[in-house]
Length: 365
Ligand code: M6R
Image 1 (cartoon, protein in one colour):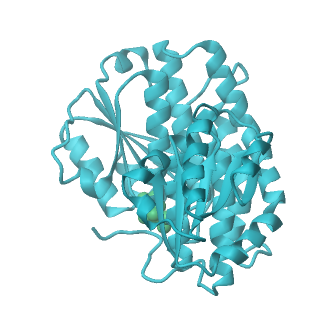
Image 2 (cartoon, rainbow, N blue to C red):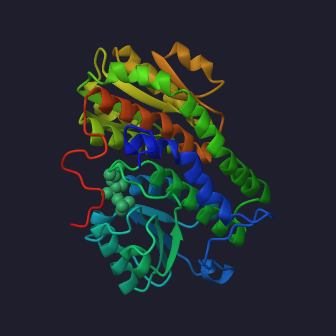
C-alpha cells in the first residue's frame, strides 16, 4: 500500500503534484471562475465582514499563516491567524460579522473543534478546510471546503499542507474578485501560477538526490536553524517543525530580521542554517542576514529561485526551485524542506511514519 515507497511520508511527498491538481482543477471553470463547492460567498455577505480568523494547529496553522497573508493582501479584510489552543482561551473578538476558517487535515483535532464551537456560539460563520469527509469538523462547520489530498497516513503532514495552501488561495481569490479588491490581471496571474505548481514540484522532486546528499551533513547535527522573511519565514516554520518531528533534532525557525535581537548569540562555527530566499522583494534583506551568520562561521544552505545564482557567493550550498511568483512560492519551497527532513530522519534511523510521542490525530486537548 506504500506503492513501492519505503515510507508513507515519501509516498505522500511525491503525491503532491496530483493532490494539488485534484484540489485545484475541479474548482476552476473554463472562464477562470472559481467555484468553491457549496460555499456561497456573495457580495452581500462580504460587505458585512469585519474580520476573518484562521484557526488551526501545527502544520495546518502554518498553512493558515500563508492563508492570512493571501486573504489580507487581496481582500483588504483584516485576518488573524491563531493557534487553536491559544485562541480558545483568549477573549477573541467574534460576532456575526466575523468569518472563521478552521483548517484541519483530520477534521478531528480537539482544540480546533473547540474553537469552531466557540465561534459558532458567538454567531460567526465557520468554513472548514479539511481533508476527511464526514469528520466532526466537516459536520459541524457551516460550510466545508475539502482538500482532495487523499488519505494522509504519515504523522508528518505534507500533502495536506500544500493542498490547504491551495484551498486558502482559492478562498482568497474568490472573496477578492467578488469584492473588487484585486485586479483581473493579478487574479488571472495567480490562477495561472497555481496551475503551474504541479510541474514545478515535479522538477524539485527530480533533484531529490542532491537534497539527499545534504542530509548526510545535517543528520549529524544537534541544532538546526531555519531563517526567512515574510512567506519564507512561514515556510521556515513548517520546515523546522517537519525536521524536529521526525528526526528529533532540535530546530528553530527565525524571522531573518529578528536574528540580531537574540538568537544570533547561538550562531557559531558550523552551526547549520537553512535560509529561504525566494521572495523577490525581500531578497537583498535576507542576503544581508545570511552574511551576518556567515561572518560567525555558520554553514548555510540556501533555498533560492533558479536564476539567482549570485546567492552562491554568500552560502555553502544552494537548492534551486523553479521561478514562481512570491505569493504562492510556499507551494514549491516547502518541497526541498520536506525531502530534507525525510532523508535526515532516514539517515538517523528514525521511525519516520510514526515518530515517538506523536499521534496522527490529536483528539485530546
Ligand atoms: O489534523 P489536523 O490538521 O488538525 O492536525 C494538526 C496538527 O496536529 C498536525 O498538522 C501536526 O502538526 C503534524 N503532525 C505536523 O506534521
